[in-house]
Image 1 (tube, rainbow, N blue to C red):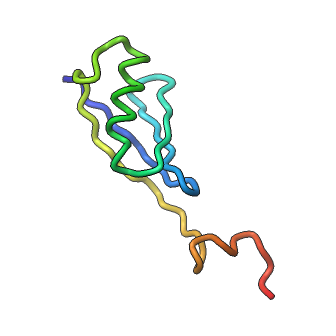
Image 2 (image 1 turned 45 degrees about the vertical axis):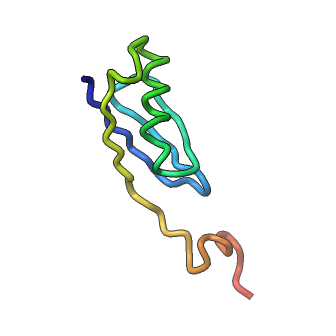
Length: 79
């Protein structure tokens, strides 16, 4: 079984996912629990190997603080 590391970083409402072990593998999901399936699917397409040939470790990486209201006021001048 081939081990893959899925580095997931929150980007607004999405998780942006990169996998360093497979060149060009980038995907995104709405929920963190969807990362493993998306990575297996993308890895299978890029490598020609079956999805069950991969073991995926999901690693959430540096989560950026979005401000006191969850980012709603980000980039705006306070009144």
